Image (tube, rainbow, N blue to C red; front, side):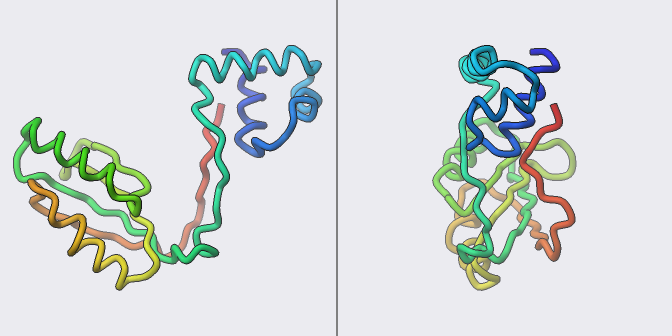
Length: 150
């Protein structure tokens, strides 16, 4: 990957609906080499997919919470089960296994505090092997980006 590939990736991250001609003009290439570079980035799985970014508040997802989850034991069986169960919960936007004082960091999007309470009590806390859950709520998003600096 070179600097031109980086420029192409930045353009696609800003607006993936741009056509190849528009991207080519912005990165200083002709259409054919731009198309070939994009195709190569896709084949190499550098570009994993194309998505639409949705304004969460306009679809009723008013509350974002981050949950720090600690498992009761550091056992592969518990961790594997936790990961499997997390994949079944669409309210969880992100799940990261982390180092430090807890095992997993979850980003959860729900309609409101009542929805969060129901989610915790009826879905998350019933997963076998969870010892503790600590939650924090987003009050204001100062920066909310999906683009990687390339």
